Length: 151
Image 1 (tube, rainbow, N blue to C red):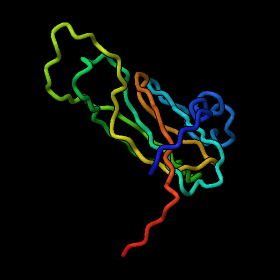
Image 2 (cartoon, one colour):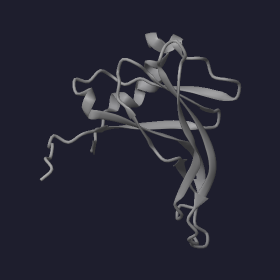
Image 3 (spheres, rainbow, N blue to C red):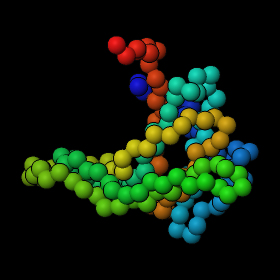
């Protein structure tokens, strides 16, 4: 798959989420949580697209070591509607153990759990519930034009 860069998608989370007609089916966030809503635009080739979602936190790092966040990403269904939504609980951060240079400046980085590939569907929002101090980021993937045949 190749990455497809769509600048309007960067603003979809804040611009279209409040007005999506199907959002009323989703429960509000519990206390201490945030309901993140991703709305993707209609595309003719939606069967060839996927949404990769990353849940994590922006934090100061040493700029040398690679960090990965543990956690749990779970799919749930709204009773009576059949719509899917997701909950994400971040866990501890693991790091490689390379020694930074003395005096190396701290660098701000987005440290996240493994990405989750979700179906691209412009008819329904992607709704993810996380703790308040957690961010959700995403990117759109598209299949290449070449379909290979097994030999």
